[in-house]
Length: 71
Image (cartoon, rainbow, N blue to C red; front, side, top):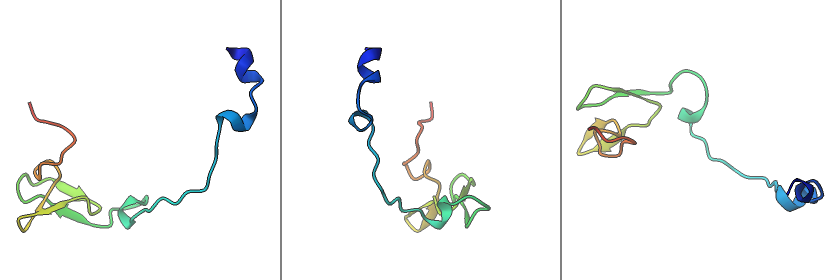
């Protein structure tokens, strides 16, 4: 298998292309652009990552879009 890859032309297993990645102001390094406070749990939410739901500013967990589930 090693011999196969050693003799494989470079462009047969690697590809490069120009791409565009949209980045918002909150995605850039540095101090936070904005800080919001969740109306339910009081967590500070940085860089416009809060959710507006029923007229309230919520963190993603309180809005039901968190990446974890409480046990």
